[in-house]
Length: 125
Image (cartoon, rainbow, N blue to C red):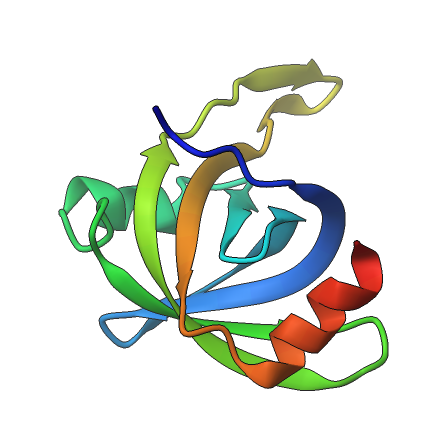
């Protein structure tokens, strides 16, 4: 049986870097050693395109760059544990059809959490 870790809802700007490509997104929730990150786009989702090219799949190691509410920045390395492919649609407007944002969500394990992250996490629990 899988251990359940306490997750804390949060909204932090963060980007991931993999294979020399960068993707902006948000951290939706965190635990001591994991996080849920999502990326969205109103055009064909670039992260999704790379998922289909098999460059970001479960097991992929990525660099995550984050800025805390205090303004302090830090980097950490994560391993993708799972992903959910985009969902979205289209909205009819008076000038045509606009795409709704497409979301790609990643669940990641934090590899060797840095002291900055640990200190920040401890302030939330």
